[in-house]
Image 1 (cartoon, rainbow, N blue to C red):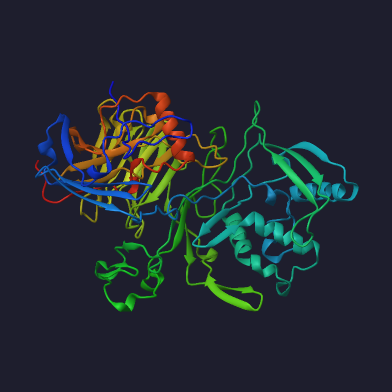
Image 2: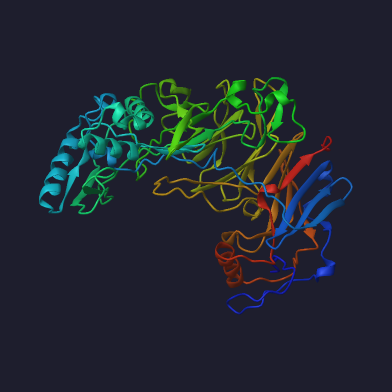
Length: 588
């Protein structure tokens, strides 16, 4: 079978001594791109009114910006040499996670007012006795305990970033222990630097009461540290292992989480339905609504800066845990964050005031109830931050709940397709949502314009063989130490747009096997309505040779090189700049 290959503008000899093949142009032939539509199935008239676009670049400063109008079958393309900025994917909204696998709170015992009632645990006394003995005699100690014999509820640990501020309960508790050992726990001694984290730790542990399961164990090893800074560290190291042998299991506080950050000074173009008159703004841009917005943060307009999260309700082996004792019930929790807060940093005789976002722990609240029997996999905000998609699995089926994240209303979870261990989704700029289970099923949601029922499921079902992987990347989000059974991926390259009962899904063309996830500067396009796929086609580009037959060894080599080397002459698509848009009413 013929496979496509990314084209090289000039012949390049790689370090491994292999000449890279497939180039078709000399310098004088480099210029505007021509796109040619090729129908694979269905009728291309179903794409009338659709315009699609993408960008391709090489690392040595060649750039092609292209658009194709399905109504006229015409290409518009521009070519540029030199530097051209790329849109950088923000990691703020979807890629920040709690880390719930730390062991520090299990053996941090403090005489600190805010921790009163939380730290006086049998397990802390157990570890403290061993730690003090090891510190004195220098002999390593190890053993195994049943956690339920020493601890009633799991400690809630966290590490996350908001703006430039990192919140780390482990760091705060260890720091306080160092201050405690030195007799410096009073605010004027500096321990107050941890107050924000300790306050949040206290609130989270007061609210999320999850009983320790019967069959969880800890293997421990405590050893002395000979050389250490007594002002910043402790004189011992405690290592905890959580075994998963026969009859053993464990639970870790590892919620799914999304952070909403609205800051008019961050240089990003954005709009939000909370802004009166649909105001949109681009910091530093030429078309600012008026100068009164300069220097203001989104909080000045009443926009929300917050963390939303759902506590995981499964153990490492997939057993359910008891979430019935959570203070306000099981659901989506909202933690507002004050982005106006600042801190003063001193550098010698100099000082500077910097942003210091502060979680408003006292305002933590459950805002949307959830089903305790479902397993929650992921949640994500739409581009304008108005709607929250909550992805869950129950009884072997995937569900999606599209929730109004301003008013916390919804028509309830919608069944989409059979569950599998992998799921990938992508938001469209118009608020539409597409997803797949990588087992031949695709679902598409579109906005209706109705306040009572803002979303409808445009299609959910089987698609042509291989189309799911042709449209959706198969790489999953990697979450360190996570034991979640169901993995998810966020497709940065799939463009989605829906109108008049049809949805367009546009993606860079896949080269060969999807496991290599190599895509080139041509497009795959599918049109879906309630009956399924009504058109599938390609937009072939004259900077891509679709006839070259690339072997799997060659694809692996290209993937390895992309991960570890600069390929100066290779032309690649700028994945997060694909787009599609319905300009006029689509034909029914």
